[in-house]
Image (tube, rainbow, N blue to C red; front, side, top):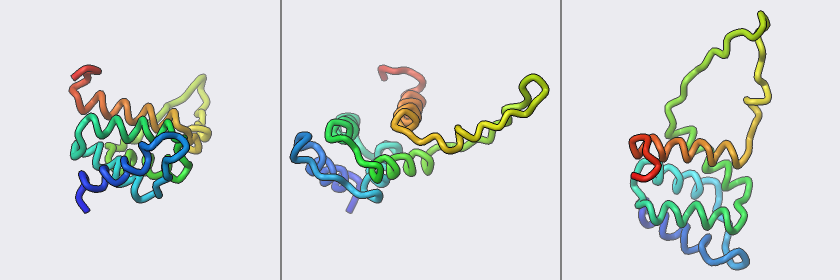
Length: 121
């Protein structure tokens, strides 16, 4: 199944309203988001996918699939946070921080970067 067919199948299940929508599994969420991040899905379908997931109240499995796609498609960088007041400050909370905000922020950053830094094109 190619990316367009996969996205059509996903949208048909998740964009039917909050009461009739079906959940998608980890692999479908991951593959759908990877197709979006690679530019294989047009902007309208990408928006429908993300808005429909949010309106139906996405599951943890769907969020984990989207996060996996973002991590796979993103350029990972190691950052040394240095010292603070002479003490090294571990940021362990950052390593375990897992929420919709992180997914949304990463996606918006990726979209903004893909469009040359402009929010509108």
